[in-house]
Length: 175
Image 1 (spheres, rainbow, N blue to C red):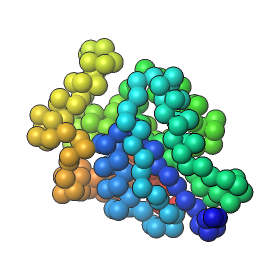
Image 2 (cartoon, rainbow, N blue to C red; image 1 turned 90 degrees about the vertical axis):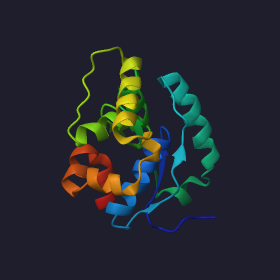
Image 3 (cartoon, rainbow, N blue to C red; image 1 turned 90 degrees about the horizontal axis):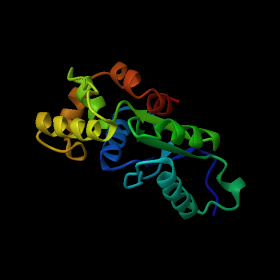
Image 4 (spheres, rainbow, N blue to C red; image 1 turned 135 degrees about the horizontal axis):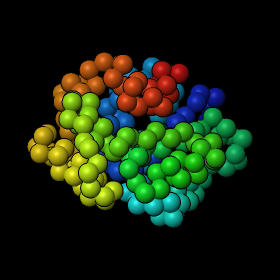
């Protein structure tokens, strides 16, 4: 079974919040020139070793053979930037030719910053992630993966906000 010549992107998301964000932004901003497959939930990870195990498993599940039939398939990874190994994970993926969008500092912290509630890292990395999630839930009264479309529309009120906060996704949706 071969794919048509149209470019196909498969998104691999760190978790449910990134899947929600990807889906919303795709509907709002994609010019539909690229086919986006259903995002794959990686179920979280904490370091490069754990990520590689999940990556290897998910890549094998795609089973794209013969390779020439899938030359137009590209993987996109949407992950938080506050993991101990975020930069190493990004380097690993880019070396394999994949696209990587880091959410800075993490999905919850990025969204809070977009509404003017920048999170300062005055605690360790693990506590900071927890602090961002707690502050997000305190402000929005839900976890990030449950944020509703009307709120997301207010947060990503303009293409400029989208472009500045998630440039890799923006460029991909507009290419």
